[in-house]
Image (cartoon, rainbow, N blue to C red; front, side):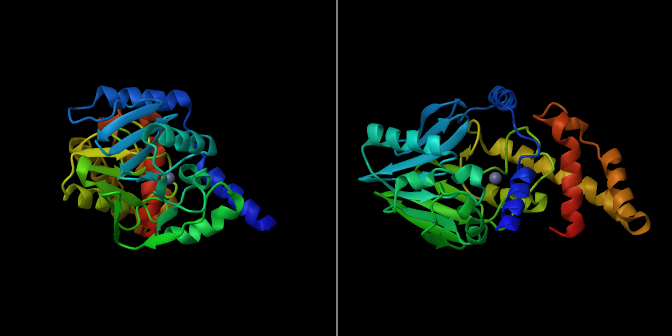
Length: 310
Ligand SMILES: [Zn+2]
């Protein structure tokens, strides 16, 4: 048990290597809001409700988004974040819509998205992509506020929430384990957790991220029909921002790969990494969120992932 706890603490430590400060989040919200273009259902509220379509709503608390789909006599939610947030969400759904929650969907197996889910009790269905199970089995003994998932899917799952269609989709490994993209045709919306933010770099050292996996996922999503992207944090955005982010990822991966191809065999990994850190030129993104803080981490994370073949 002790070894497991140590393992868990270092796992959490890894995820929290560069914690987002509230000021950082607010700066990001501001930057994202300034660069937004039409088709916006969300204003990037710090807290409160916004309507995506008549039956799809966005509940935001402390900058974290929960999509709530409300059909006849039942509702679905994705991600609860903290126990406090889950309790407020549950009460708000009761007051505002007066329907019980039937489905709680887990976007991916990271505890910071799932804490508090158990407040919805034992009668709801807790739905997760099946690759989340191993990680959740590891997490849940340390995180009693996360309910065990009770229903799994592989490639996709269509749910009817009181007559409103919701599709859950898996695009392979990109971030965390079993990342679930949720599509709400009525709102022409896709909920994309954690892997794309307008004009912001990827999370520091790409802990638990695969840049090539994200790129493949975003390209696949962009080949489908949608108008609005609902991220798990911050305001909604559109296809143009996803396309721009695909451009950034392609650039980052191509440049790091070119350095690897030219140097790895003759100079070895350590020297190749320091060449990449020096030579990869991302200055055209220097106005993007967290450029200064995360630029080196993005280069190093991409190097590591290409080096180990992710
Ligand atoms: Zn995550």
